[in-house]
Amino acid sequence: MNIFKRLFTMGKAEAHSAIDKLEDPIKLTEQGIRDLKKDLDKALQALAEIKALSIRARNDIQTFGDKANDYEQKAMLLLQQAQKGDINVADADRLAGEALLKKDENLEHLNRSKAEKVKFDDSIAKMDSNIKTLRSQISKYENELKTLKARVKVSAATKNINKQMAQIDSSGTVSMLEKMKEKVAQQEAIAESYGEIANESKSVDDEIDKALEGAADSKASDKLAELKKKMGLSKDEDSSSES
Image: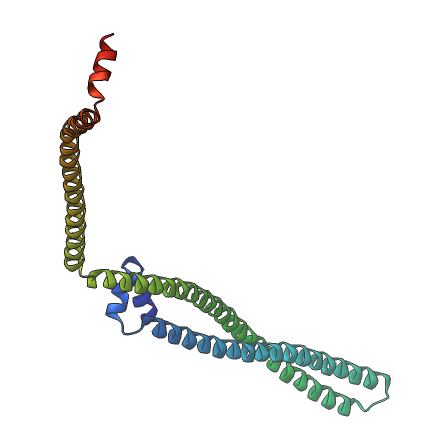
């Protein structure tokens, strides 16, 4: 019983603490419950045997009582027969005396059986009480074993999770993430710089083209005037324009 007291007073502590203190509390508890059930079976067998003795004593009380009454009735019948003259008085007295002795003998057996029955019944009451207590303890320990098993599972799962979390290389992970961020930021900056270069290059080309637009128009006019002069068309156009 001491193992159960030690096991179940640990309920105030964490399940993993119990595991640290005992090699395997589940197996120890299960073995303890099996031992209690064996004790219960023995107690039930003993109770059945004592009840059988009590029943036998009760039957003996009835039997010895009936015999005592029978011998008393026979003694009375013998005396009646002698009084009637059916039996010799001396023989009747002798036989009646023997019957009374038998009666007393059966009364002694009856009293002894009564005393034994009282003892048996007292033992039955005590044993029955002990069996009820034992059954209650077994039920209690089985329920607490279920709770202990559940707590051990939760504790083991929590322990594994915490262990895995503790084994994570947090510094390495953070470092890797920072490198990734730096690389992405650098790529973004490069892309932006190429965009600015492209815009700058386009602006210069636009300015050049715009500046050359007037020169191209002037050159085209000069070429046209030269061609008209060559064709002799410039004077006519001038006079027509004046009129």
